[in-house]
Image (cartoon, rainbow, N blue to C red):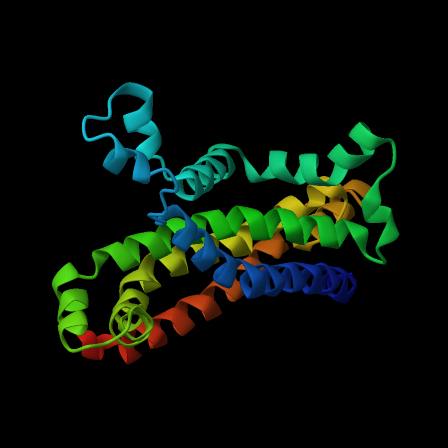
Length: 241
């Protein structure tokens, strides 16, 4: 029975690991794009303030409007303000309810695809806030020094801001990534057999509870490996102190 349970949980573990790495692969770069969007200073109606020296009311508000930043911040607010389980349900079941046909059935592994999309969107928004904090945490004087040296904005970001940002975001980023490991259990919401669901199946069919507690060993092992990895990364980046 022990080996039967272990093999079953390992199969669920493979799904969790797949979801984990696919989420990181796409959410990490997407989060940086979202962070840039939320920090955008693009104001298409800024010229109104120059044409009307005493712009007031709606004209003044319109001249200060940054639509890209505002839209991005609203999306991040909605995603961070609603539970991931709700987003999973909406993304997977919503299209079929609204349009009468579930598009995820067209994919070979539609449930996993929908689950990955929900996780990527959710974690990209969380990562964007961490990226933004890391970028804004770098003293402005260092960027100004780069401009004095004649560096372009691209060079300043990659040679000055990015390296210091990485050092600053490692602790909060590691916390979010460890949370992602445990959030993979939410995949069961749309009937994906992950670690917890694999263990619970034995409780329902065999009437035994220890497989459900046994799943905790796999989570602890996964989180333990990540903790060691991030500790190693932090030591390697300690030269910024």
